Amino acid sequence: MSPRPRLPSGTPQRRAATTPRTPREPLIRLLSAAPLRITGAFVLAFALACAAPGCGGAPPLALTPKPLRLTHDGFFVHDAAVIDPDRDGDMDVVALTQEQIYYMEHIEGGWLAATAGTGLAGLPTGQRLHPVMAEGLDFLIERDGVVSRLVYSGIGSWTEAEEPGYGGGPEVSMTVAADFNGDGQDDAATAEGRRVRIVLTQPDGPPFEATSLVGADGLMLPAAARRLIATDLEGDGDTDLLVVGGRIFVLINNGGVSPTATQ
Image 1 (cartoon, one colour):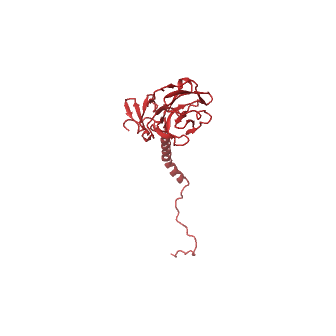
Image 2 (cartoon, helix red, strand yellow):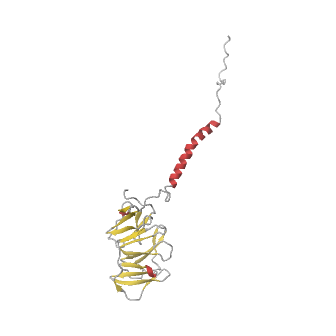
Image 3 (cartoon, one colour):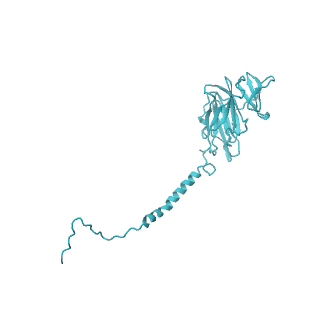
């Protein structure tokens, strides 16, 4: 048997025949993994959707305290009242400091000093301010025990009534009843010294202390509280709080669901 001829150096060698890979194989592997990928994406999307309010995953109720600043933080605030003269659903604030009366207009995300043009800066300040809600947008102002009336003009300004003042103003309560968690039942907020205490009701149990659960324990007033107001400050349908104690603080309601007494 004659030997196989040797090919010249550099001649390409023929490889053994192999089964060619079809172009369908990468597609088959991709499709086999697709159900897992689709399932994972669906679960993630569902979880994100149900983290929003109204899908059983609403955030817990929070009443977040933040200062309502006037022109600067050096003013000692004696009292404040809320008012909505433009009927836009959110609340403006009238504040009494040791220097003058301030008007704070609500804007997106907070309040802005807007005293100019209201006539309030030219009036003597006082120690107490009481809205006369049943009779329009007037206020009663107490100055050293004497009460006078600030009359609303209808065009964004106030003047002091010419009628003589009288002694003694309305009593100020440091406890307010309001529905903070949207369950249709009244909860309670109480200003005690320099803090605000929150008590929530339960449909099937006794009221319980929820100050720390809702974040209100982070509030420390510079002075003892002199005014506590529960109202929808931002016009979003949730009941907020405004408290005065040397300065003004608001506790903004996030619209969350009620925590439980066991949390």
